[in-house]
Length: 254
Image 1 (cartoon, rainbow, N blue to C red):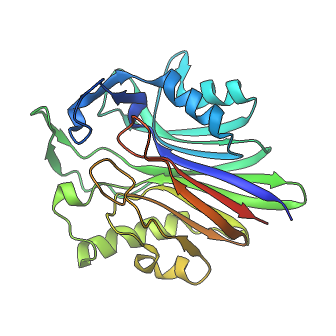
Image 2: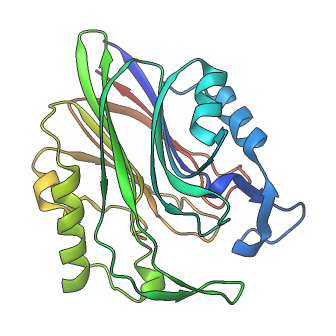
């Protein structure tokens, strides 16, 4: 029986909270925190790392930097220009202690709705998507998917609702996997302790890591993990970090 330690974390473009600032104000997450995030991950020592809102540009990648420091393999997927800092592209990444055999990527339905940001800027909804890595863990093959969904609350889309159901059905069709052993982790942007019931096709095979405690400083339950073919042994929401989402760390056996 093998243990597998995972971490899923929306790193918010590598930005961390300014010293002595209000953690509930998104504008206060503006200090450069790439070293802080790397050091935290190194100290946690997960086998599988799922990251959302990673930044990439020529000669820089959060995922590459972390993977090289850990001597892990990685894959990343750029989805759009970053809404955090438009000199970067933003995306999702998987970093793995184990070899990555292949990857799949996708972009979810974009409603192209406007939103007013905290700093007063108006911005159209940017693309959201996923990346999946198929990895070998000894004799086992596993699919790892990380994703980032649109912020339903900020666009006044109730979850559940007919409109949300249509959007989530598109998401579900894209992230369905044929592997018997699989993890789906990321920022679902759905403020509920449990979200699996919103995905009836996944519900047939997957179980859910219940987030009994908030995964953001604002008290929201946005970050979730689904699993099949493994046994969940423990979950910890690391609420001592300086980013605007908390890492969710799980231990599984397979």
